[in-house]
View (cartoon, rainbow over the protein chains, first blue to last red):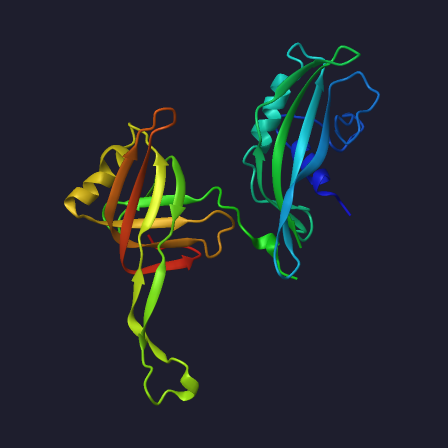
Length: 143
Length: 152
């Protein structure tokens, strides 16, 4: 089973703005990760889902879920990943009606994704990369 | 299990306005913040009498279905013709206007439209916030929808 957060990784990776690579190829190494900051010195994006708010319940046991998402951009660029964070915000903020998987019957739909604030620059890590974080509110339901 | 996957978030919905009834040309209104479609209500006529069975009241429906006011709010854009003149003029002149609400989501059963008259145009100028205006419309006749498409 594919996690909701993995579909958003796909969504970021499919951006024509060149945000990052979710599924690595022979020529493009992976740059978007989930819950894991690899031991690499390159520029990376890491998706960290967190608790969010309680789901909206219905009497027939279905629910609309409201997790939240923290996106950390680690970057060797001079701006410490701020521009990349803006590009991600442009892709995600107010994205709506995203249905996945795209190749078979829809099993999950993201009705709305909202930025909860602006990208925040948090300085440099121990190998000199700048990093920025941005938080998002996600609303989705499943079949 | 229900299919909540077909549920819809309100964003991005559209409010459209025509200054020549719903047979005219609709133009989407800019800067819309909220849209409240018209309520529909139907009253009843009490038919209870001394012969009423088991002591429970009885009624029949009234003939007329009443529609309530459509209301909307928008960020005021001073260069927008709808905002700076057309909406208010429609109220001043008593012009029959057209209204159309297109809810967010997939295209099925998402449009409600009809004729009506402007009944409110209320700008708000706060001390430390954006200027907005509220409008209201009293529909006349039966609204069409929710429909999958419109003929206008």
